[in-house]
Amino acid sequence: MQVQIESGIEIPVHRMVIRAEYPYERMAIGDSFLVESNRKTILIMVCKRNSVAGKTLGMKFIAKRVDGGVRVWRVT
Image (cartoon, rainbow, N blue to C red; front, side, top):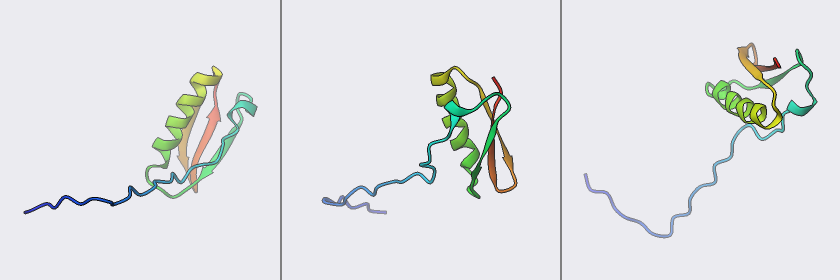
């Protein structure tokens, strides 16, 4: 197989499905919110955001797959 080198091809812009700001800073312990999605990778994406928010805010969040998407709870 021969692979050709090409010039002048623009890199496509990748847009994440999740761009909404989640209400982490307004949550009390026990509060939750739903991220609606049917993507298989949504749980991984939400957990990464939970981790960053938790470290930044000094809180802990947990996410579980539920009907319709992923639900996030503040646990500490």
